[in-house]
Image (cartoon, rainbow, N blue to C red; front, top):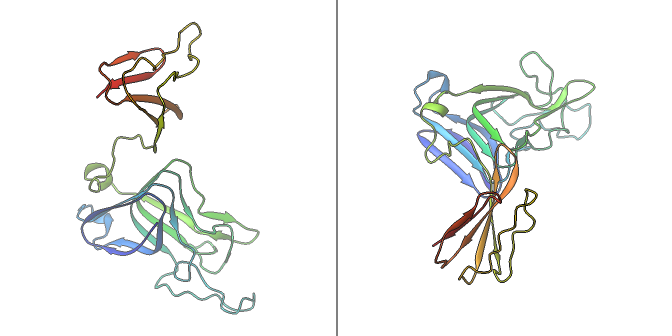
Length: 239
């Protein structure tokens, strides 16, 4: 996991195989509204990207009782994030359904932690929650999102821009008598892999948009030939 906050001067992509946690305001040295594209941040989480519930981001009730006033250690009651978020699961707020409900207004609306001002973009597999409406006010943040045009014309360094994002999965299997299973089209024979002159096969299961299914791709190491069965969607590539 990686925890980030502060002011960015330059062009950076932060990547992690697990969660990325935003622990305080994360902003550019030059306001993104200026359109200079001098500063830009890519936030690439292999799991979730999370806005932390801590004593900086969220109001704090020191006495633990309702009569006590909420306090904040942040310089503003709102959260500011500049950057393009890409989460292979979701972008969300920690403990969004609990905590203060009217302590920090978002503009003119009574709310728990104020506004979440995000300027950049959000790419995620599943839309993550950031707030929860209560009987009076609500917990978490109210969204105030704005798109940064620099993400399209001058994206963060090494940031994927293909439009298709997914995890890779690799499994080692024994090729002896291995078969890909029943054909997906009636009447089409399966593709046996045992004749391949190799000691091991590697199956790469990749998430394929827009069908949100799994398409197997079988690679044979030390294979002397290359073939493809177009009906099965299985590729055999010799290396």
